[in-house]
Length: 196
Image 1 (cartoon, rainbow, N blue to C red):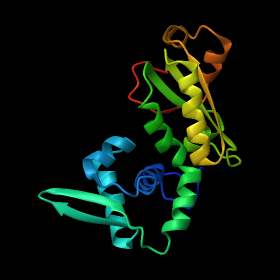
Image 2: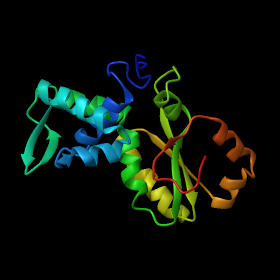
Image 3: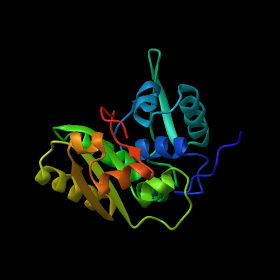
């Protein structure tokens, strides 16, 4: 079965390719092992290996071996580096950036992107999302969540709306807001303890 073209950017082959590229390009000063990439983008090892090999073959990313570990990094000297960085930040960047930012927050049981960005990521066609909606399930203080949203806005160049719900409200779907969110596309930002 042929994979659908991503609705976030039809220039890429798959969401896995977009997630891998965004991870590498948004962390261009770091190297990642194939195992790290697989874990971070939540893709099958064979998929990661295949996509990384294509990127290495094209020169967009570089690899080196340390013992048996293959380390991958962005090729900042590639002529397409800057335009690709901009495209990836605008399309797949919200997931990578918000995963990293949410991981620094205390009291998070689960976190999701919802709304138009999540819908595009999961294949619903439509216009480019103008904002990113984030749901934090947990006990994190609202001031910390707002600080996280402002950091994300500064990096992404678009509005980031962050909302917190309690673990009980999420589990029981006790409000119309939670019921609505749970019925729409959700993209997990964390290893969730609370199921959608």
